Image (cartoon, rainbow, N blue to C red; front, side, top):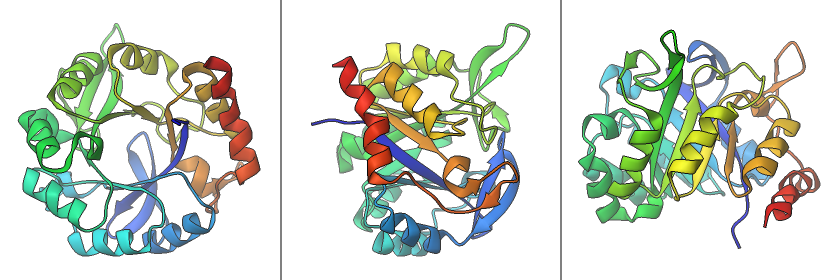
Length: 260
């Protein structure tokens, strides 16, 4: 039976685990392998790990790091960062990763989506849309390379295209809400959710479990991803890896049954 997923998202910069605010000001928060071990103990639903340097620097994925992460990880793992070819996708999956996230390369070369899906299966291909509001009308636009490059693309239009090419999941990441801990951008999520039928995960803005509960109450089966919520505690943002207990998570996710 399908159920909502509560997903920590870890960002890797210069080999360390960081957290950003609106895709800038990366703050070091620890060692990625150690974080994975802690999340293992907390029995998380799934884990997203993204190397935020790879695409910007034009670098290949760090296969050694990916292998180490996959070896430690006892939950489904999604990796993103620097993926440009179906061969790279296939190699990452062979290391024990369940899903590969592609972003800038999927936008530059959309056929990468279908070629990768043919090799490893649709369920393993996640297309990431980093989105911010632009212009006087504050329209949503997809950006790439850590939010530094505008594409002119509507997230709704590209989400539809990605699904038609074989993406098994869409991940929508709000740049404006990233690290703000003020809640998800439901207006953005509404638009994409109405446009596609594949599984949807969302990221950017969660500050409390109440935000996640509200998201699940609104959309039902969805991936509720967060970064700051799971690595910071309190108003001073002390670094502390955390995740809801099984009882807390069951209570948060139980609201989805009200929508069935």
